Length: 433
Image (cartoon, rainbow, N blue to C red; front, side, top):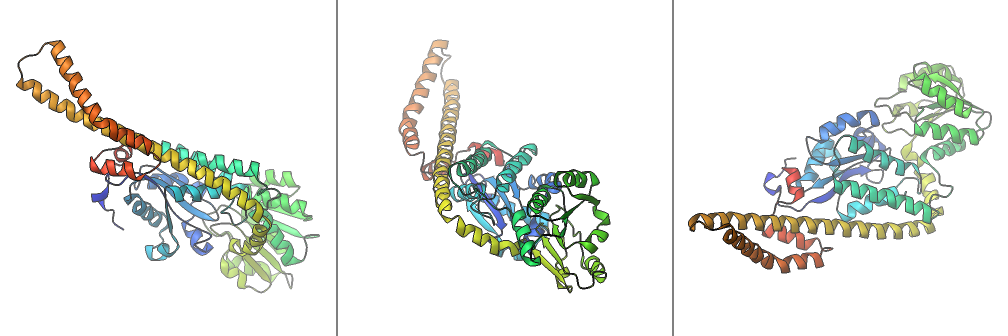
């Protein structure tokens, strides 16, 4: 997709959101576009080649990029997603959604409030937004506009959880995974669970498994130190990720949640393990994105494989139980979005007013210098008076337009018209140049 350079600097600055999530794309596509923590530094280096300011929010349910700029920024972000994922545009476009300004604010604020999650009210997403902002700050990709929007989202998420019961006894993807395993195997007593991954998701899985009465928990991680630390917390046994075949051969349930870019269990590995299990079934819950387990493993006899999109049945029930709290949360989000949009419009008006005054003064100064060259040498007092007179003329001409802009600062149309009418170079335009 080619960028239309003729429009750059002429469109007003906006906040843009370009992404895909569990509502628009299956896990088979989400895992191809996902950007994990280990990839973030390289991802931001690449993103900087497309846009000057942007924040990447990538979780198991979504990959979204928030950017500021003019309309070509949308195409630039799409080009970035294509470049980093290698997914052709023809495969991406049916699943991509675009949001701008107020609708982008609302989308992010609903995510922060747990309203757009697969599991309504879950806590993890608020921390993920905080981490996304911190990573973008570290990469030098955050400007004041994006910082204000993300801080507003974090503030809204905290307020929703404080003022509503949407997160009271809330489930998480990890707890739903354990619940699904329990239903699939008919209870967790006397079961052995192998947890692949010792990150945040692994910790939650292990903790819920212990609370639900799993008799033996084995933690597998790329580093034995991480596995040992989590094992100590839940009374589990640590093991190295490279030596899980023995544990697999005796496990009843496997929950895979490692943040790995490549498959950890392929179909051949699982098939070999199943040869020695006679008729003992193996339930595998893969909640990682990208997925840890090769999907074809689910076709092996006595292997019951579920991925994160299979959790929707439980999440729908969770949503129904929280309908009343959802309405309260939506009201808080609506109020905070209106406040954020108002602040954004006010900031835009101030930027346009500043650019208008600066351009007018530059024109005045240039004309004054030309006039002084044509006149006889003036005294210092005469030059001062002439300068003051020209300043006064400019101030009086701009007085009513500026007052009108201030009075209607919540209407983003007027700053845009003034900016285009006078061909102003606002701060946002300068950032793009």
